[in-house]
Length: 235
Image 1 (cartoon, rainbow, N blue to C red):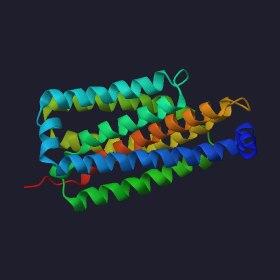
Image 2 (tube, helix red, strand yellow):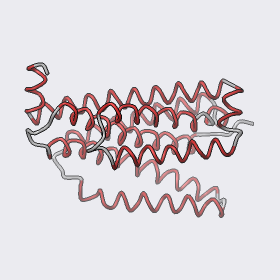
Image 3 (cartoon, rainbow, N blue to C red):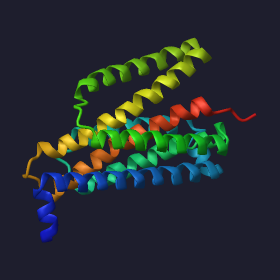
Image 4 (cartoon, rainbow, N blue to C red):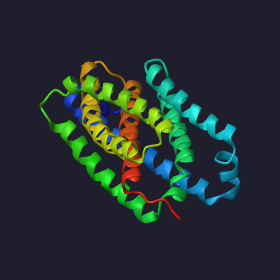
């Protein structure tokens, strides 16, 4: 290991800055991979037929997403850095497959508007989470409760089919995941600090990957809820 890298790993503040840079880099790579896959699937009749028009295959992809997230979250301490990277890549690809439907549900203008609005909201709140001296753990528990609440409300609305309720859920969803962005950013900093000076390069990489996954999920959810708000179904 290079001397500069050794010094970075043993210095908590330097390592924090380095990890955050890696987190944003990996998150960007994941989002780019998702976008490429989504567009690729939407552009191919063969892939569309295989993944989206086949109920069994689509269900498998959705379930695989949950499995990969659970695997990354629960096995982080025992898996290798390479497995963490591969798992994050697989999740990004699977998400791209499921998100390919947005190219048929929304116009390019709506998708662009939702993306740039998401980037602005995400960037602002992540910067806040990175720089604030306030401990955000106090609101973290409420945010998790709200997350379960919005999931339950979404399931209920499948049966109610209320457009007004659907719109309200979307607004709350944007607010919730925007706040989660700040909380998750600070949580990455706290995770780094919890290791003190005892961290190796393998753990450093895995922390970067799990941090990237956390912020990736926040970004994707903000984007999807904004699509619902901005979107107009194609005729």
